[in-house]
Amino acid sequence: MAEERAEVSITHHAVGQGGKYVADVAGSDTSGYLEWEPKGSGETGGDDDVRIATHTVVPPAIGGRGVAAQLVDRFVSDAREQGFKIVPRCSYVEAQFQRHPDWSDLRA
Image (tube, rainbow, N blue to C red):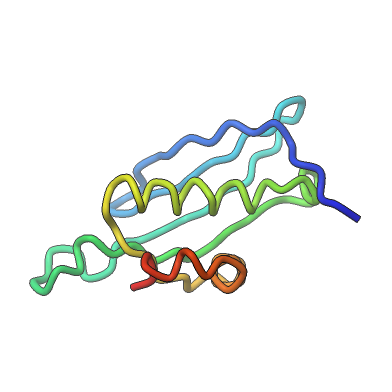
């Protein structure tokens, strides 16, 4: 059965030194999110341009509509536009990287 893709608005919010992508689904007051943290923030060695995907959470109320995939797609799109690499520590983000070999250049 194909997954229905919901109409989703994704925004990015700074959280500490990291960030959170929040997915608001049309017609629902429930949100999903993808959190990331910087790797080696402030250290030498170029790690300032590496972001660790730590958690992707989509509550059951909005599950099965492609929300998690859209969150990861936005994260990957931002990585391409802003020039950072990703460590997919979150199991869902890792699974998406496995499904998309064309993202291999973004893996840190």
